[in-house]
Image 1 (cartoon, helix red, strand yellow):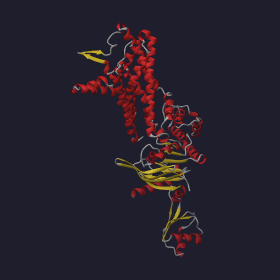
Image 2 (cartoon, rainbow over the protein chains, first blue to last red):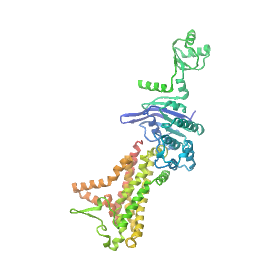
Image 3 (tube, rainbow over the protein chains, first blue to last red):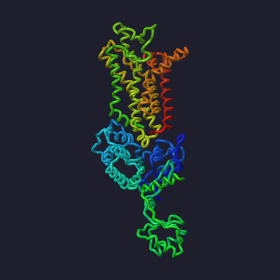
Image 4 (cartoon, chains in turn blue, orange):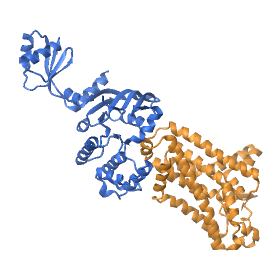
Length: 306
Length: 273
């Protein structure tokens, strides 16, 4: 069984007349790159702020590295994070800023500063003052701070904001490297699903403070993949016919009355004939499959209708 | 907590603002020593005789050429009686240690990964008190040495008297630094902090003066003349009244403890943006 790094139960945050977070349940396992997806103001940053202690929850609880309450606060040393915009002392250089935090975290080996700067390709400008940095450089310095003392969990809030396409691509590689080589679990938020899709293995959709869906990458692929949807009175019997009569194995039973076929070149009319011949009642066969952005939109519109 | 203090030391001395506080002290001391005059500011510096404004303070009332030998020897302690001037360098210290963290939004980096809000508050307060103490003693030592070099033995009394005057004033000045720290955590914005703290001392005096006139309360007059910060620092420099010194020390310590407790509670509930 996979080790749980972070788990929330009914996590809520209310302000006077506004609910920023409404009973959110989520689970992050060790080794995950966990993508937080939601529009601006959906509640992504609020969750991150609660986890990192920048604000307190109004209700619910969370467990981090199997610790709750005050014991969870002590686990903050195992977290590296970048919440909202990267903030540093404007009058200090990149190196001085990281050295400040290295001393603060009790890091003895100052070589880790150079290592972190090198990881985000800022070694050449380490003696440049933070106030002279571009937005992209600031973001990268924020990430360097997050990885400075080899944390077990990294929380990054909209880390690709302000980066150019090449910068985004380099950062993606950095995330994958940190995850694969150092085994760092990551929570990354973004409102750009297509970007998160390229790095994350699990996704959490949130809208207006409410959890919409928690899904693995494989499940997301299946949900979005082009397929033939078969609506029938018995998905079980339908599946048996598909395998035995048509040799189709790449399908998924969604529920008792729905089944999806992911194999290409299956003709709906042939499929219909075969199913009816084998006493499977078919109420509908149609093509489905949507883009990631459309999938996200459909989740949101579902929430809006609800 | 020690790591936080060490890190702040590193940061503060990489910047220029701390040298501003030291610079203010050097300029004030140099002017006083050069002119052989006590440099009062604010309420305690003036008094009225009819329509005429006259300066108060024993030494101020006479030109330095007609002072007695004893008055000349007491010159540095007289200058220390105007230590309300340290109010502004202390603002700079609070700003450099604390407000820089708020104005650069770097506080969230520290709170999200390194320390709890209570530890953060206490380490900032400890550093502010430490630097304020260092600055207060630097002021006395620099003044004493500069005066000795410039004005010679005739104007230089025993170092122990200067040390005693500084120690007597210390609790009230540190109490003020602690109150400023609380206000810093309360306002959380550099501009708001400056807007509150810079005129605070004078507004406080103004309100007290107005209340004295309106209510004609003897208690208020006594408080204004003896326990209001500027008056107390002035009296403490030369006072030998143990009861008064003890009361002022207790007031200073109470300010530190109460503002720390209130400040911690306010900060713990506050949202970090």
